[in-house]
Length: 186
Image (cartoon, rainbow, N blue to C red):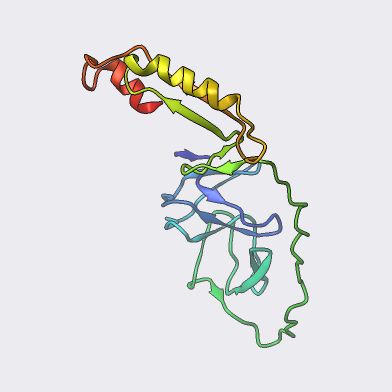
C-alpha cells in the first residue's frame, strides 16, 4: 500500500470530492487535510475521488458547487465519474446565480521611482556609466565621469549620477577566460 500525500487537490473546503493530481493506483493510501483514505479503484489524473460517504441521490460538490448527484451510494476512496454520477434530478428546483462571489476590491496601487528591467526585475537607480574597454582607458573614464558628475544635472531629474566602470584587464585579456566572462557579465 503506497502513501501519496500530495496526490489529491481539494478545490473548495465544502467539496466532498477531490481531484487526482496524477494517476493514483487502486488501494493507495492518500492523506488530505489531516484525513486519510484508501482508493477503491484506479483514479486517472484529473478525475474525482470521493472524500466521504455520498448517499444515493445527494449532491456531488466540486468548486463549492453541485456538479451532479450520486446515482448510487459512493464511498470514501471511490472513483467518481459517469458510472456513478447523474447530471440532474427531475425533482430538483434549481436556483441560478444565487451564490455570487464578488471580487475583492483592488488593493491600493503602490509605486516607486524605479523601472522594469528586461528580466522582469525592478531597478531603482538610473546612473550613466562611463565604461573603459581596456585598462589603458581607465584613467580617461574616471576623468570623464568626474567632469560629468560635477556638471549641473538638474535638467535630467531621472539621472541619479555618473559613475566610472573600469577594470584591470587589457588588450592581452584571455578570450573567454574568467576575467573576460566577468567583464561581459558586468
